[in-house]
Image 1 (cartoon, helix red, strand yellow):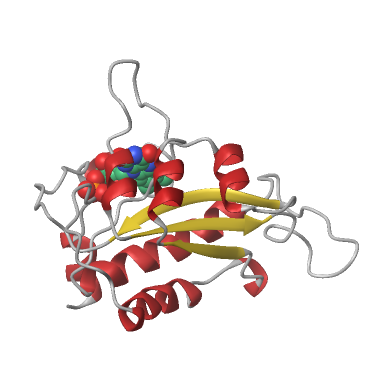
Image 2 (cartoon, protein in one colour):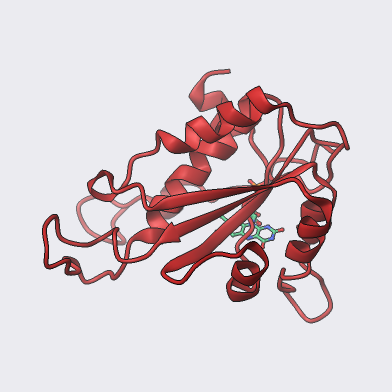
Length: 190
Ligand SMILES: Cc1cc2nc3c(=O)[nH]c(=O)nc-3n(C[C@H](O)[C@H](O)[C@H](O)COP(=O)(O)O)c2cc1C
């Protein structure tokens, strides 16, 4: 599968088979994350591979409902997929100056979310190319997740994804047309 095909056919998977993911395949997926670009090559990301079902149940319970009448649709996926990968970031590295004293050098704060997102998108595309499903999960209580996983101070839990073989083939979700999102020379100019 080439990159463009992987980008265009990946979709969020929220139903999984119980088939385990073997160690070699898991390593390939993590390797894709490892090779993502990052601010000053600081690689602030850290990944926790969760296979223990009790820990997955606890993580699933940290997910936040998207609206009052609808639980987070990814909670079952975190519970049922054979693996969950939790992406964390070391704070105070991304977006900071190259040398001591470490200072933020843009007006956009700590760039940890950006770096972790790049790594996680590499991971989800690589997983898809290997026939595995994922879904980026952001709506969860990060402090509770950190406590469950023993994440130390200074490291933020950013996102997670279930990982396993899909047990559904949901339709591709629509995207805005290029004409709605791309401007030329000035914002708003099509
Ligand atoms: C930053 C981010 C956070 C997300 N958080 C959740 C989430 O908490 N629960 C969930 O079910 N899906 C979550 N999603 C998945 C999106 O709903 C999904 O990517 C979007 O609807 C487009 O569908 P597709 O991934 O199938 O193309 C998240 C996606 C992103 C990029």
